[in-house]
Amino acid sequence: METQYTVTHISIKLASGFDEFTQALEAALGRLNVAALTTAGHDADATNLAIKAMQGEEGMTLFNVEDLGHLLSLNGPSRTAKRYFIGNYLRASQIISTDLRLGLYAPLRVLVYEADDQTAYVEYDLPSSQFSRFGNELITQSGFGLDNKLKNLITLADERGKLKN
Image 1: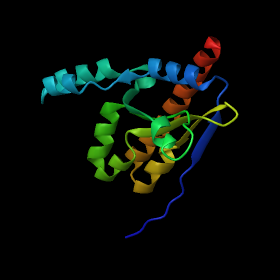
Image 2: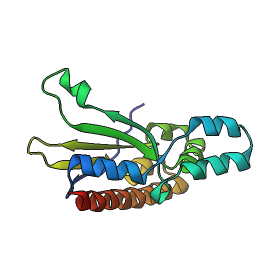
Image 3: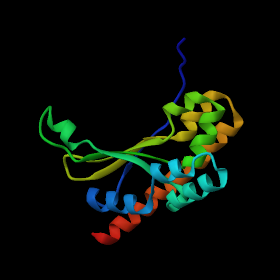
């Protein structure tokens, strides 16, 4: 089966530099703590406390970050780029349990890179445009909420990064 749908892609030219933005972004995010979740086990209260402790601003957590510079250097000069996997752990759990196919999109992927002219950019696909294809109002509304959280987080990190310049 093949399904086609429209995804809205966002590209933002940052006012701050790559290093300043990525530092501010990483500082604003909570960190995934698998050990704390494992310790909590199936205790719902302990799990909720562990999840809340992992949340940063906008309730967002950094699941993983990949430095793409080394990968890109295999085919030419090294580039400055990072791919972030971020989201809200509890919300991701809820929506993925509603429709397992959402595991393709949650956590969210955000690319931050420096162009040849040293200008920094952030790019991502709008969560609501990805989530709307499932035809489930709860999932679609969750996507709209993530649109706003991601926009706020990026704006905040860019403003803080500008202050460091």
